[in-house]
Length: 317
View 1 (cartoon, one colour):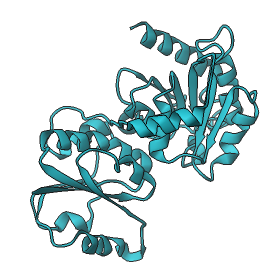
View 2 (view 1 turned 90 degrees about the horizontal axis):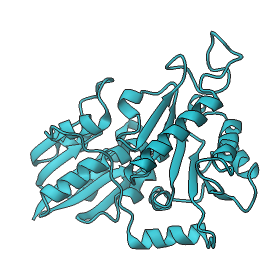
View 3 (view 1 turned 45 degrees about the vertical axis):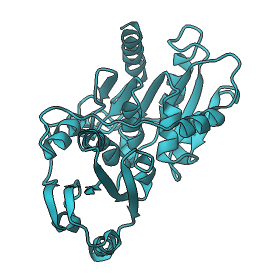
View 4 (view 1 turned 90 degrees about the vertical axis):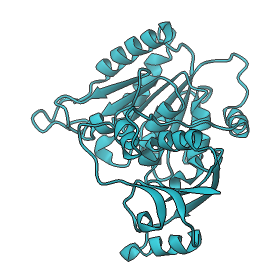
């Protein structure tokens, strides 16, 4: 049997961005059994993909000692193909075909660069397909809603504080989008965040009526979050792994960018909108522009207006 070794990132966002490549390999080489090596956080993204027979989650250790340990777990295999997005020691294992990440280009999006790594000349956007069981669990998380109200998904957190739009802005944005004259009148609001990100996310939950807010902060695995996001009419969030997850499940996605690299890590596709700070590259926290510390590099009114126009365009198509 042919075997493929797929080494993905330790970080959620980068791991999500590799899923398009994995699905492409699975579809073009259906006779190859795939082993995925990745961090423990994104492990659930890969576990239920057809054709993936094994997922090994790793924790980084000093002196890169985690790689020899993984090699021992893999055993003596001559791999049909190795795809290594981490340029790790595993890339040197015996293989017929090998594709090793050698660094990116700040002008090329990951959907393009990741595809080029395996010799594909067209983008391979991220793709997550929750199973029926995962969708059923998501339905239980959301509970009964007799009015069948739409769902607005918010991800007000990120892995660095300068990437976090103020939670006060998220709260006001949610209120305006779900108002009677908003684009999602009466919608429930699902607030996402990882464990440890409660300080930024929970004020948004607390500021909304209990009948409207759904607190998912620190409560879901990445794939559970993906299943929940499939139920959302719209996602708004910072530059984060959850933002890429929303893109990967195909829902309208608005991403708020400041100090990141939107050309590389912006939301991909026609159903996505990337809003950048002014001047570009300044933190999206309040006072993030040193030239104007009293100002807001990404004003609420601008985000509201552009989000409304984007959503109307998407839903009218």
